[in-house]
Picture 1: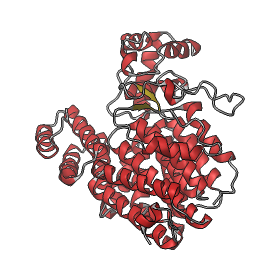
Picture 2 (picture 1 turned 90 degrees about the horizontal axis):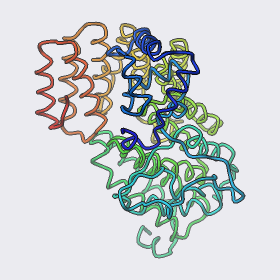
Picture 3 (picture 1 turned 180 degrees about the vertical axis):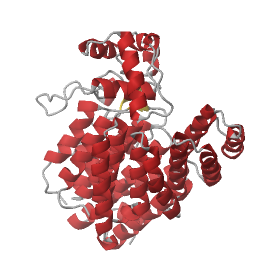
Picture 4 (picture 1 turned 180 degrees about the horizontal axis):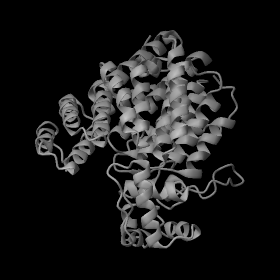
Length: 480
């Protein structure tokens, strides 16, 4: 049965949700098909009673369109519908989530998967961050991690929101030997992080992963063994938080979702230690994007709403703009057109208020083109492809120096043109996206190109085969 390939999957939840809605399997198939047409699924879902029966019996794991339709029809999250398991979160007498799985109770080195917070259960206790650094900076190449969802994912976010806001707040070799870490060294490390971010933009997560991990281990060593005052210590934790976020991003970009989430859990804790709630809020934004990719926009929306609450007044207009833009995309996944419009309007208004001098270094990429893309992406998701095209054209026309983003913009614009029947335009965008990907080691970029190729193939256009051949020749990856 397919449960073995999807740990935590509980197919009985789907049957229970259908029966609670008073539907037969035939009724459910008809309603899911109609819902996908109304919401503008591309391609439209053609649900059948037989496939629903196979889903409910655990013979076939629901594909992404089915999962999205089920969540929309039953008004429930991926966790509640049994697509992903969750860890229990009530606390025992020691303040550790009851039922949490400590690392010694997981066969961590034999290839079996474990929850992303394995070994991190006491992250928010005194001394817990040191143990967290030990966990994420120890090589774990043979260990696979399952993502958290629902209540299990909400637990560390809650810990951040209620945590005490008071943080206990010449060169690398000398610092590691016990000499003082000074402000110059912290500034140098901060500059190196910025260089890694920009390398990721140009080369992709796969290309810079090892560099980012090595840099993180270095900074953690400085935190542990260097001598520093409260200001320098806070600065080191801020650098470490951003590096952990970046390492998590490289994992996400190459499809390793469990490892990405693991680094992000520690990054939130480190940002709190640094007294930098805006960094933590940005990590939650990344986690929300992951939830969307995993087909659970409900969890993504909860994370995005928590981010400004936890950051309080520490976020610039630019940072708040990107959160609004992400909300628009998540509401788009749910087909909520009114919420999409509200979030899009807010994102555009905030980016107009932006003052670059007030922004943190990582926010350099949040420019009007990013907001325009998010607006268009959300509109495509709600079946408003024609309305989306001007936003996506603006994004493509304004983006420079971000090849992965350009590929994303081009492929989504291609999808909009497929939906409006302008297949020649979609093919043109596909070829341009493939050319951009030639020197980029990014699994997400390849996945976006693959998706567009498949959509164009489904139209039967005679030039679809040439597009796929181009993708094969440039990317050397399976696209069909």
